[in-house]
Length: 96
Image 1 (cartoon, rainbow, N blue to C red):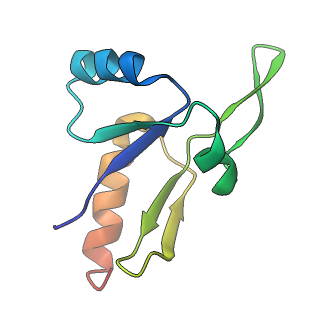
Image 2: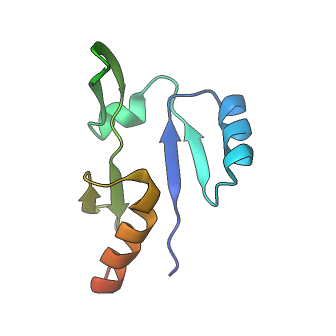
């Protein structure tokens, strides 16, 4: 469909390389150790897990148009079917 897919993580590059190879990811992962990109997109912040509160990345995906503007935000999905969710959106909105 002519779409570039990028993932962003606070992990260092070496760790991302190992993770990407282990998981056989079909897209590039970018390192954002200082959280600059995550903070710019508003996805770095307080999280809660098993009673603990900590700062981390919220799993949110953005569809960015050729003009650099955010076309759609995906914030309610399961990681196991996320690719399908985005693909269905793109099929329903071929102008994206």
